[in-house]
Length: 310
Image (cartoon, rainbow, N blue to C red):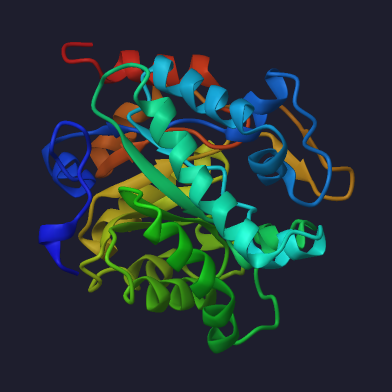
């Protein structure tokens, strides 16, 4: 990657430089904030539908996290794919514009505080496009080659929109991680690689040491870790990610509730606590935040914990 062209935040630092200097705070779950704003997220496009129907709601959700102290805003492109849009009658050109718009919305929202911030364009897994919970299982029956062909157009479109990084997130399977890393090495943008895990394995059942090790020799990867998993599983994964990859660790678990794909709702009780961040930091985490069901109040609590002297 040509580092002279690496995107920088408003203060002139790249995200990688910021991670080398200290802990950076991510946002929380976009969907729960949109629902709190009264948005209907039913349907296969989930929050991505609002990129077309109500982009002001997307921007407002990002702004809520920026005001809470988030320094990195993750775009609403997790479930936005050319294939998914096509099923809803949206052509390729319009889909590309909506993907680019997701980056623009986050960028505008990040400017509301005047503080240093970065925008990460979400590249969700193949299973998110299926909208049937497959991103929590992996093992789609596709080859690495087929997954490369699926991910390449969207990753390229998002990279061309000018984010500070790509978030390769909620990856359930080592095979998909291989495909994503192959795709992004064609692009001139930093990335982080984040798996969804269960216990000490990926959702597809591979050992985490194997999964995290894929990123060890890829200079483009500025952080590796986990997201959208139980907070207790995140606690255990951080140290492994740091040891195996030699890179800063990214960690943003969900609330601890569980997603029922059939009923399309969350069940159980939340276990996310801002106090966990100290343990994450000691184990090597530098990019921290929350995922599904972790809202602005929880991100504000993390921001308070990360203040110097707190």
